[in-house]
Image (cartoon, rainbow, N blue to C red; front, side, top):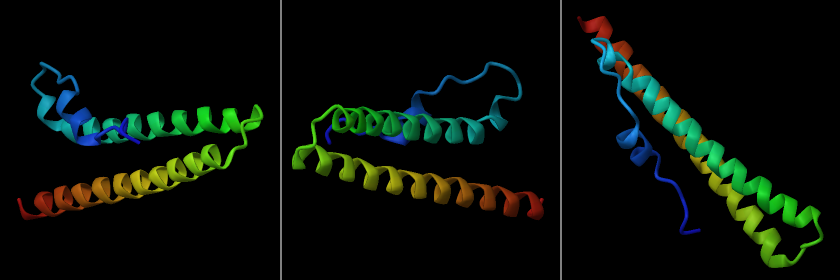
Length: 97
């Protein structure tokens, strides 16, 4: 599982806008990075599932799909927690101004 994608690296590498409103886009960029990470993991899972459907039903392949499924669950929960936490913090900041 060495080809995991670090969602924070996607945020760091995300293109930024040169307009004056670019400061308000970082939250959207963070959500987009999480989405891309989840898409990549889903693609991996689809490829492994296709192998199994194609007849490669060895325990190693099935275990690989199980591990990818658990990783997807972890990434999904982390994305939800991260976006919710940042959104809540932004809401708190907006109330205090």
